[in-house]
Image (cartoon, rainbow, N blue to C red; front, side, top):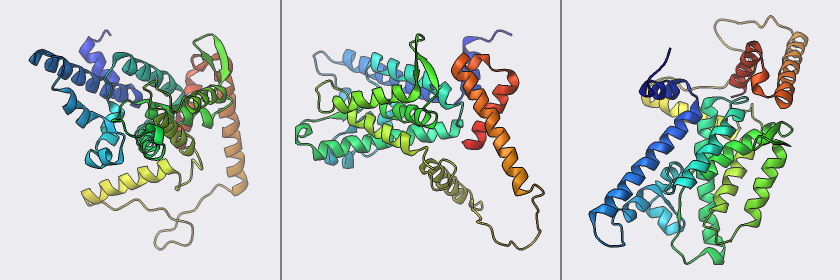
Length: 307
């Protein structure tokens, strides 16, 4: 059945995954900013666009502490905003391709939290850098773009499966950890340069991405903790009971029994992990499309349990 362009957009928004929604929001903000810039350019005669100061106040993160304290919302709005076409295009292209790898292991919800928290961490790194390093002080700086968020998603996937192999530019086969190392080294070596790139924001996203997979199944994991906290706040607003974690001990009321012995559980877990490892090896050698429908479903089910 052929869908119209409008129906295809609705379908992708509903079923395409969190990366499609994130790209969609970024696109909507980019188009809004672009249209407002054009309107401002046409509304006056002269070189100064009256719309630019307003857009900077709303959609950018101001690098100084004073600027941040007067415009704190920039810590969020800036990670969805782009003022230049190529900046937007390359960030969204990178997000699209790395998301396919990320979603093999993690859930859509985890991608959203990694994107937002990684972007916030990147912004904080940038503010601290401008406060600490004298060479960066004195100039009015506006930070904008999803680079820190995208770096967080990439690093989470890369450090979760560092030995997985991908084809760079469709030609050169490299392990994920090597590609991650190249990005980290590039940002470290270009700190303080005049290339108009927020390298400290990149490093903040990198740091959060690596942190986000530490003790990934623990309730103390930064993403798990944040997600649980947000859900509890939502439940409090709706007047519902909060999520609680029980650590063993006896419970009053109806008893439940686990009929699977410890030995059987460990054997089942080991067998499941061996199946997942075999599927991941197959992806590394032949690509995701080489998987059977059953193998894709197994990988999807495992990613939901991990996410």
